[in-house]
Image (cartoon, rainbow, N blue to C red):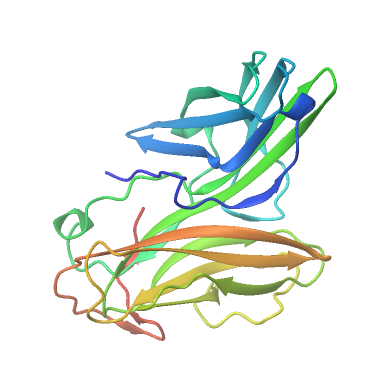
Length: 260
């Protein structure tokens, strides 16, 4: 089963101070996917020495990527006054089919079901905006997060990512762990240019070298820059056992087929 604990990896564009000191840290936004339900949790803090004002909030969801428009409102909530130096948790469920489609993945599974080798990786890969308002103003926090499985020594795994910048998009990847490699590739899996063309879509490609222990997790960040604004897109990758692989060869290793 695939789950996501965003206390390890989130992507935040901004965490703006809210009304009367109300704060939502990026590390305090999380979601888990179980069967067809995605459960979102948010922990709002009041760091001030006085009680915070009440506020109302909305959750807006987007596909996995950067600079995307046309978000889908998927939930709203109320935040009561929070005592000084305290917090309030917001939790609600959203059916998976009410969210934008999760990002497609290309994984190096052989022959039969991936379940025979790597456990199925349930997770909604996408972006969310959390927006809240109160009597004295509001704030917002943005999170871009995906997860991916890789097989040590068997080439690349790929997760689809989209951009929507009217100009060229510069990019770099940070936080790549020892034993892993990561880059961007085009839709046809050829190397992506830097900068990217306006409106570019393609994949984040990740591989792990032979000998990387099973169950190793690496959380990296792809930083997309458009018009002087940089959006960090987080991706947590975990190594799993794909079994013996004998399949067609690509420029990034052995790959089987689209599997999601």
